[in-house]
Length: 135
Image (cartoon, rainbow, N blue to C red; front, side, top):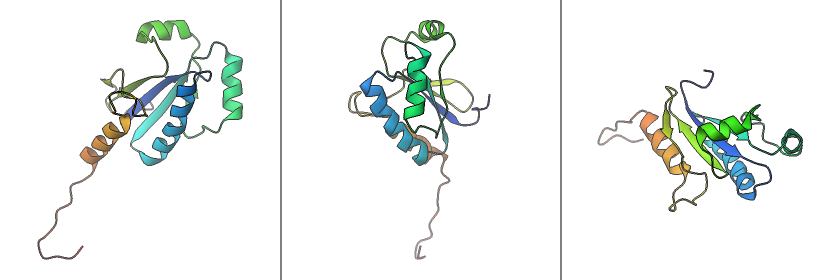
């Protein structure tokens, strides 16, 4: 409920997965660039000690990163068959994209950056210009 009112991008990742770690760095940049998006990462490491080591040794304090109590139920519910996997939820709490595009250009040369840009464009007020005026 705290995340309603904004788009929310959920990143399912593991600290042992190099692609996940690379994407976390990109998400750090996106979290600064797109303030109209909530970012949330869900760690699916095999054990909580690996997750705690990851949190202690990395600087990802820009958005919440959580470790679920029941990973197996979460994995089953979302039918996660690979990591990283992503989910985009709209401001009303409805699923907008699942799986959502990744932060990198690895899916048909597309990334979620393009989706975020289009959302930003849609949310920005349109400027009107008068011919002959200087801006």
